[in-house]
Length: 155
Image (cartoon, rainbow, N blue to C red; front, side, top):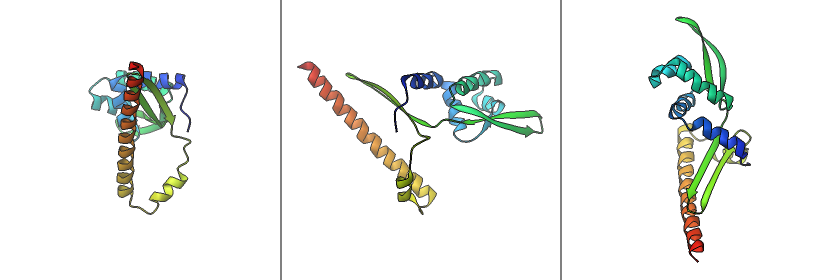
């Protein structure tokens, strides 16, 4: 699991810097959507949503997922998430780090064995609990790192 390049990180940050694009992504992680439906939910124009979809598509975060027939007119272009990643931004005195990890090629074989046979809801809760515990430890480690750097700089 290697961090992505600086150029890839910059492209993702540009794509998600906009609140409307982040709201579009929140909708798309729930499943395929079409522009008019997203525009209605966001209370904005379809044209504005299309511009945001274009930005996200150019960054390869989303993609067209075909067309869905509509009884109310022309077929609707469907969109879906096409890239899965995790993004960390650490910013404190003495610390500035941005890392993005592509989740596509991560081997989960041995980890998946721990959850095999478990109820899906129970497995998801356990996974979420473990992620939260890891994040809390990570935050504490970052705070310790920051205080050690401050101490070192004061010498």
